[in-house]
Image (cartoon, rainbow, N blue to C red; front, side, top):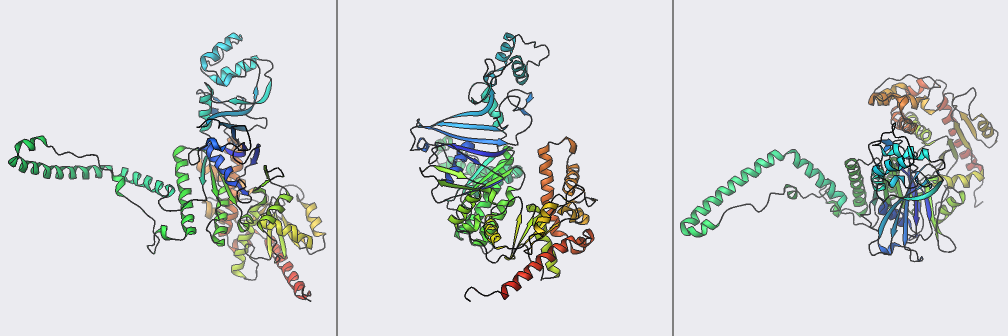
Length: 629
């Protein structure tokens, strides 16, 4: 399952209820002590209640109410589940979803007690009618009894199946009186239902900012200890022989010693007998620390290096625990990843976390107040936390005014070096063009580097980073030219022909293209695909290449027919193929292959247009009077 929204009420500084939308990647932005860490700690309490435990003092001090609510709303749950019997059912059929068709779980904590008590509910669009409101709490014998009282014919119903019995009872009731309400999962049969639902929750892992980052930390030592335990298991037979050899030799020495003692004091020797105090603990013999190539221990390295190493031990340990528990997904929550990091490392780290968030069944959350880091994040992933006029916290997102406030607060400023915007449809198109620019630059260094050239900003229509948003919103008012590249897609005429004509009519040097092929992936040579995937693929200019690759990859690894896959799984597989095609495959494609696949020289025309605008702009800048003049 995937976390879609977080709900917090009356927890620490969050007096009133707030709902925070959660994406695959989510960045919490705000001043110090505004409540960013509080959000992550609320999630730790909801999912684990171990690293951070809820205390009675966690109820908001500005509220007389002592009930704390932490809720999570999930999507992408299994279509069929086994809840309280061996029969499968769906959450919709059991009326366990909210009015939006989502699974919404609330944990309510009574902080009036010294040790707060947890009660679990699902907020769902549920029957209120008599004989239907409490069905998920009722066990099998009572379900059968109720069905008989309602004169239901049970001859065609599997009476061992609770879902079948509940379904029959609901059908018998003409008006279920559906209403969104909290249904307890702590009572009777509902406990087993929660136990089943809990197995589908993603694993949550919190990496806190205020930690010493030593190699004694559990994130380092726990996986090390685990690997030692696993290694010892593989040589148990040899260790048993060692133990017996040691035992035999020590007993021999002890026996001979007692024999000598017997010669001097027979009575004392009779009372003594050699024996081992305990079994040997092999794991305790191995003490590990981390040292670099120069033999400098990790604990003696800089704080930034220590934190970076520890962060990756943390990731490895989370993956191990996820595999061991069988959790279907994982949420990484990392406080201030920029802590003690050089700006270059900050950029590398955020790119790695963004890449991690794009993997299947994985979500990443961070907190930050560093402009260099926030500037690299897509604006749609930013959540801005602030106080209103009454001191209450509020969280806003997806508004231009919010982006401007974030930019102003963090000091993200427009890049005055920008000369051209290159606008494409999606992030994968940007990745493809960046790889192509590297390829072309190897042959001709005059070709602009789309990844690192400060004169060029690449934007995709689905969103942009905060840094790019600031630059584009400011610089577009100055008439900076744009190069637009749209996919032709299917149909008799290009999908975006109207947009292309509008851009081309601006008269400020802007120019727009649409691909002569279906989309960017059709410009990737089949030989490059074969080299990466290990299978041959032929396709036409208008074929859906990512889907074809996903189907081939699926067929090579599964016996389950593609047509029988759920829509959500198909989308994920196609998305993964699209990502791999535009990264790993495009990166390895040669100039010769590009020329063979792009006989119309479309790609060349795009780069020519970018270069022409750069040349015109530079010439204009050199001819224009300076500010001082």
